[in-house]
Length: 448
Ligand SMILES: Cc1cc2nc3c(=O)[nH]c(=O)nc-3n(C[C@H](O)[C@H](O)[C@H](O)COP(=O)(O)O)c2cc1C
Figure 1 (cartoon, protein in one colour):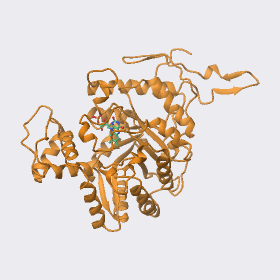
Figure 2 (spheres, rainbow, N blue to C red):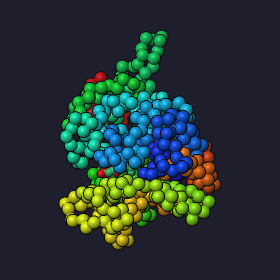
Figure 3 (tube, rainbow, N blue to C red):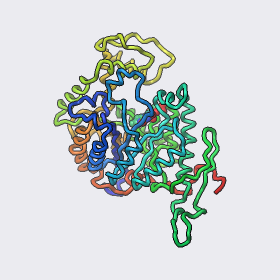
Figure 4 (cartoon, rainbow, N blue to C red):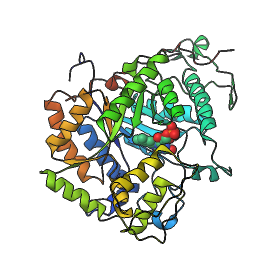
């Protein structure tokens, strides 16, 4: 793809050693031992780089992912590397691929986060990305001395201030301020140092940061808000937005809505990239691809199926209900949410059993088909402004990632959608995102 092409298709991979599908780790081809194996991750990163992916992304929750330790014990979700530690190591065995991770604003401090992502950006030569989340898991609260999760609106207020402080810290030094000039005896130019002196509702941070400005100016900001508040936050701060979309029309509406919101905040909509999720299951024929999806579904233990449905719907105990029976009658509650209502309607309209509903939930954004069919899906969504790129989750690893790179990526390249070589040195350059100018001050500067 040439530098003059206006829109470029971007690909991100969501990496979880036990795979994106809840039962993926049990597949005969899966490598659940890879979860805590660096060589496994290094091979995977190189495969993705061969496929010219923009970014390898590691999600995070600072707790085990689930109250129900029994059903949790039947998934591969109980352990993972701390993401930044893993990405720092991967930066040494890769050259081009971006390295992004989640760090939540609810149970972290801006100084730590600014410092860690600045370090990763320096280590990797400008390939770092930060996924700003406010934490989906109330379980995190208990690991940090709180009785309950901070309320949704307050989490976003805190996140807003958090991001402003982090950016101010990244801008502590002007780009050229650290001169390390032996002749004059100046390590840095004092005129190029800007101390944030931040005092706000949640944070008091004097600064400056103890590391020079990141090569990208600011590591790329990822976001995945989906509520009204979350979308506003994403439109204000996000540069790559993850979203879960199952249907083209809804994805187009989300895409247009986010771009309009970004424009309303004075941002160039082209610099806010929308990436829906995609779980590709590639096979020589569509029938075989569907058989492979069914094979994965067959590996979902009954307890896990119940738990998936319980977590999806909320306020529900299915322990004593047969998984091959219908959902019990569910009373109206004031905890009704769009997702809960959607699932109840789906189960009702299609007369789904608990197990069948669990299979739908586990499949997520799965597209099972031939390499051509998967490339067609990607092309259609990209060309019809439903997606600027995709966050791709492989049902298990490493086989499906290799299949995608060997069979789908060449088709995308032949169609002129995907680069054959990396264009730039940094993640920003590859994504076509501008480098923030050092003098864009995010906070009132009160002193030096
Ligand atoms: C691809 C993707 C990755 C996400 N990764 C994380 C994560 O690592 N940690 C987390 O707490 N939430 C994660 N989320 C959840 C979002 O940050 C967000 O909280 C959720 O979509 C609900 O939206 P809301 O915060 O606007 O209510 C992710 C969401 C998506 C779609």
